[in-house]
Image 1 (cartoon, rainbow, N blue to C red):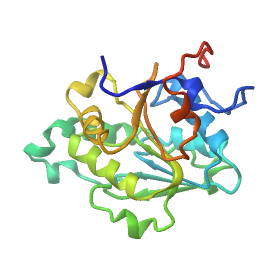
Image 2: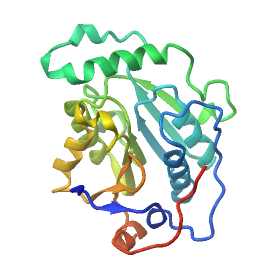
Image 3: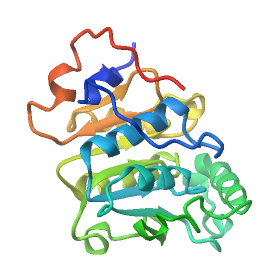
Image 4: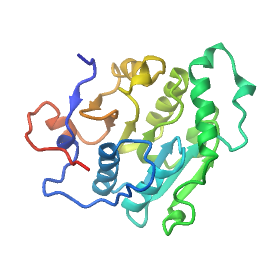
Length: 238
């Protein structure tokens, strides 16, 4: 059994009557359809004013969050600079994430970010930086209400991104991690990192997905009050 407690999707989404989300299945998703529905549903429901995505890739998730967020929401999405050379920092400590980083950079070159040229591009700010070397507190003094961690899966990188996310999370905000339970986690570090952090933070895995979640909302928030409660509501399906 998994050490992290599992929370079903209906316990995370507070709306009981259902809600519409914008989803474009013609775009190549880096998350599953169900995971994208949950991310978009949370953005619709929580109405964050400031969103941070660590790991832009092709910008599809940022584009969906921009489409599903309120008009006054600002989204910052961070990725390595286009001219970043992973070979310049290759060493034994990064060996686990080296191949993934190379594949990520090569795949990103196949096309521009999905939000470019769209009518929501003005809501998205692209940040090019190595997240492990950035001073998050000085760069983002206003903090964030919603943070998605989905960048390098090397343990040291995931830990750095996660600790920075906790430092800049606003009261009542939440953090999502992708690839907690995916197959290549045998090699990479999302799972290892979150299992270590669970002693200090109430992190849960989201049932039927590769997502994990931390909700800093009030004590009576739905995820904390109902995570152990049985539910018969079916999660949304594509």
